[in-house]
Length: 437
Image 1 (cartoon, rainbow, N blue to C red):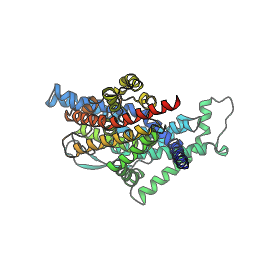
Image 2 (image 1 turned 120 degrees about the vertical axis):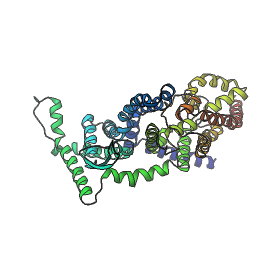
Image 3 (image 1 turned 90 degrees about the vertical axis):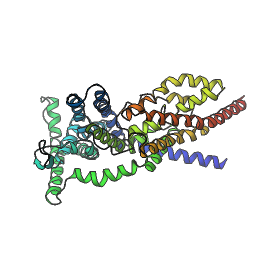
């Protein structure tokens, strides 16, 4: 009895710590911001898919090149401005989550500060002779696009946090009479904090340029973004973090608390770089990205629970299990599996927690192996997470017919893995029913 109580106490404490970390205001604001701009990345995936899969079926040669301007313009308005989009979105979400009343001004401050930190001189390639030249007075897609996303995150959080704190200092507020329109009065109230913050960042940018011959965007990218991305998007790092998130989900805390915070930003950077490379006809750099994880690690939703439903239909004779399966099967086809997780249930069901945590790691590992040996194309298209299994892998890999085969193999193995644990779960439920009688 004492052992059980100590285990329960440990689980409760671990759950509370994870919940507090996941709901920390800055991390929550980061998740909210990515949720807001995610439709743009899905649109970018559609543009890449149309440009590189659909158009080549219809036209070729110079006509194809003209048709592909469609996807190029979509890429410019989505992937190539991702860094500059995320900063003000984070500013707005952080201000909202901190109940700051002037959310638009906070967003503008985050955007303006990010622009201040951009390098004054950049290297560009000429169109005619492809020579590298130094230019000034321009922003580079490299800095404001996917490469600059982490810079947008850090500067957006930092500038907004400073702005909110300074704006609450009454001595820095300029109060006008009641006859002045509220919009004008609000602008004057935040004028001094805005001047202070922008001046501080301008000083920092000047020192980095003059003394160290660099800029903050380059430093963040090389010292923070790339090392973090290499760890979190390595196969061991992904499996560890994603497995931990699924384990927490099994105890009632949504996996997005961990995975959405630690994985999504860096995985999305990989996905966006893959899409940009695919659109440009370049080498695809990364195997692991957020769509790869979701496509091969979430068959029917978190924990690949569609395998459990199939196992139930094939092997179970328990009426309650089959009733839940019939109700949950259609949503699961579109990767919506809350009815399974909370209805079967998987939450706090020790028998089913093991395959629930194991299956994503298995699916990701199998897909990684076939991609690494070159048998399956890398994931290059952002597809909506509600796209059904088999179809989503075909689209995500740019129309590679082998991807659904890999996904199907994973599904078969998943059914075989869930099967014995399903039987154990049903026997436990039957014994509990007998005790309650």
